[in-house]
Image (cartoon, rainbow, N blue to C red; front, side):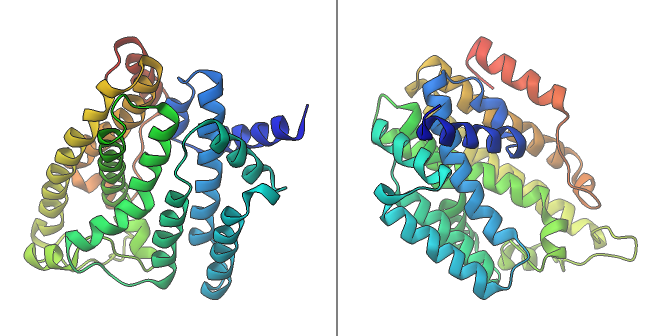
Length: 285
């Protein structure tokens, strides 16, 4: 096995063990595209893990800076993940600058702070998730090179809004609040965790805000899924499987917001597999 093949095998292992939701879509791709997307996922995961790790903020910033520098000098890379990304970028028009946008968003997480408005939040979502959508579509290939990345960007933002609603409690425990402050104020919500370890929902304001936010996220999904007709069948299946898993999760949260008050909600393995199978068979989520 060559060094490049070993590098892609490393990325495939990372994806298999750590991509809880994305792996169900990635496995629907033909081998070459699957390998390239695993490389993208592995590097994106590395960046995310820096932000979510336990190191002091200054060390996180140093590691994120090191990632930026490594992307500027991919030709000299020996790290397996970077080797795989380099090879994939030679075979696909991967916008490497999108990794820099992801680093920007993770740096914002490290610095902390809240989001005043949804426009502010949308900028962050575009950095940490829209960037991933654009990286993915560069590997999928789209019949419209202008609209494709724009729809992929919107789809990524939709997925990130779902993550935010799913992880309200976990993020609060980690000192992070992603729900826009003006919307918290509008619904009379003061985010806090009660003695039982669950989010407090005085007067139902938090539930109302979650449902309202879910309705907005659905609009982003509708826009983002306009990408699907621009893709070949296997790539379309991958995109719709990923989106389908998150949309089902969003629907469950909207139907019963209390499900996220005391746990990290997820779909079962068989539910995710069912979405993936239907996406491949019918080309839709």
